[in-house]
Amino acid sequence: MRNINSTASTGATAIGGYLELELPQAVHRLYPDALRFQSARAAFHALLLVGKPKRVWLPKYICNAMPDVVHALAIECSFYDLDPQLGVAPSVVLADGDWLLHVNYFGICGRQQQALSIRFNPAQLIFDHSQAYFSPPGPGLATIYSPRKFFGIPDGGLLLTTLPVAEPEHHDANSLARCAHLLARLYSVPEAGYAAFQQAEQTLDDSRPAAMSPLTRRLLASIDDEVVRLRRNDNFQFLHSRLQHVNRMQIDPADADGPLCYPLLSAIPDLRKALLAERIFVPTYWPEAASGTAADSLERDMVENCLPIPCDQRYDRTALSRVADTLARLLGDR
Image (tube, rainbow, N blue to C red; front, side):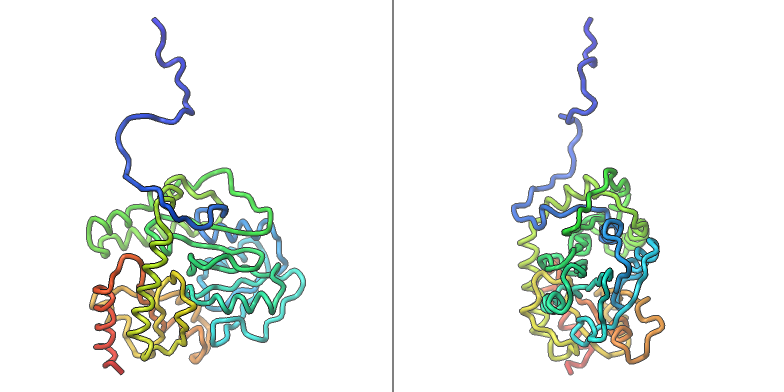
């Protein structure tokens, strides 16, 4: 009798068996030609390995993951001050062999980055769009994206660059283990999955490059970017109409296109804690950036007083009205 398994190919695509999660194929998808890594910091790591700059300039107001990558590769790292518009301070001068990374903060700093491409040699500029997924690549050496800050996916980083960087051959093998908080939030309240979220974030500390996992690729391919962009824009505009009179940050709403959040710069003590008591969760970005800075520094002001108010695609006017009404009550509508 013929062995029915003798012609089976272990590399053949499986047909049949149990069903997977139902995920649509999105019509609108950004950056199809981007290199795909397990995280934005891994994309940065891969870029540095190929480009080998002598020195990298980073803003003082930044997540410590990025300077950690520079230090791990034994590259000289210098830090610069931001100007009041979140651009690069006038005192910064780039030498040959220097690279400068600028963050498109909250997704509202496109004009600042255009100005940088005129002020500096674009071949020395890296645009960090971890907070600006919908902002097009800057006219520089590279642009880095972090889609997991905008969508419910476990990991992922994108890189667009003029350098001959290649995706790693091996894939990130930990994506499945990072999904617990995503499922917990669907199943229960956000608090139930917060510990799992923190654990998932810790597993991305290792910046050694790996390619984006098949799971994350498939999840990302199911998200219609245009629908998300439009909802974020509408939510941002609504919050700005309600909160601009209490916002110390000068914002031109025309600069926001699919922004990360609505950055509310306030000086009211314990406002973040008061929002938490109302189950309105507002993170603190990069508390380590305030270390060693003057009490009146921009970095300390941003860490202590900038509230990234959610404006993402999960929310409608009803939810955001609750946020705006709560803030009006807490601020005394001043």
